[in-house]
Length: 475
Image 1 (tube, helix red, strand yellow):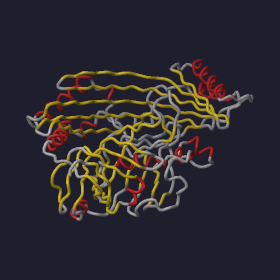
Image 2: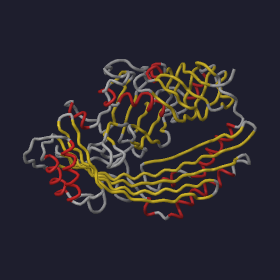
Image 3: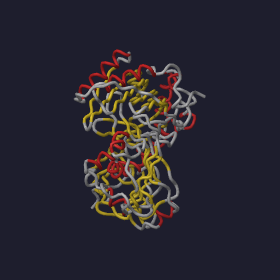
Image 4: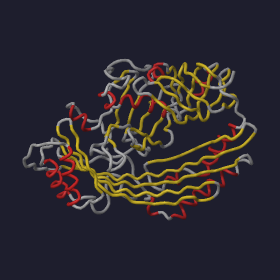
């Protein structure tokens, strides 16, 4: 077994003595806080479209970002030069950007922060040949086309990355992590009397190439193709307010977007969240416990330390309907004199960290998921959600339903064509009236915020919202 993430192999990204000198230089102009974030990232990806491999790329990106804080002002500079000279120049630039006039000598004594890896890695993807990776795409393409003659187009994507990071700051923190991620996605287009319909399936974990010992790409292809073929016989979705039952693992993205962002401390500080000032209040049904957990290996949003050098954590945000806390990055928590939550994240060394979600999910309930459907006389069963838009200030959202079925007399009947699900996040939390005992995480996701994307996971058991608006076309 390879060294688990968090236990980097080989030479450190930057030597400790160099870091200490660079931090001291960053504080020389009078900074209150300085930080060095170094990153060494390797990645590879392959894409197949309509039977042909269109792209097979690999790359490596190394560099460091240096942050200096003076009062409420932050200076930031980044460089791809990891020599001491390059780092020192970046530190001086960041210090100047923080506009401090004070001087003095600062000595930095670093202490290592150790955090358990969320899981081990058996096979580093970088040790696997390109032909093997491309072979996955070909196998998935063949399996999808065997699903039926109505299949017209197949697209598949393979990707992996290894991200070694080192974080040190003037508070004495020194931490490192080694994050390996592997993913696969397939999209299938089928054609029939109702036009073209698409089905998609994806898998991704914070593991190595052993991912494909756990999941067969042929099974993923069959799922995607089956979804597309089923939608060929779909009827228009109803329009109006109806009960909504959401399949396990498929609706976590709704709560990530509609509620999770509103629980990030930067939105709270700016007073652009409907959850501002509501800690200790009932904000959801008593059936709802909402958790953000960066330690949840091997899920897509897991890591040992965050991008500010602090251990990932399991944070209960809503406990039986009561808002208990927000998610915090280290710098904001430091200013407020409280502990962080391990949610400081950044896309690359070229970006400043900000508070971000990791693996966000609704915890298990106690009800039989089949019974939830049987107790719903009429409504819509959502088996897969697509993309959406959310206003964090109000919680209003619109999401696409990419796979859904009509519920009639407590049974799933006809598939429905793509339609929108319209509602309000806080109201949806209050309107959850049944939660199953079949918890599952969904597929890998990328969360965008202020121009940065980071890997995240979402999940939930089967649940029912007593009323939500479906923007369908049926009359």
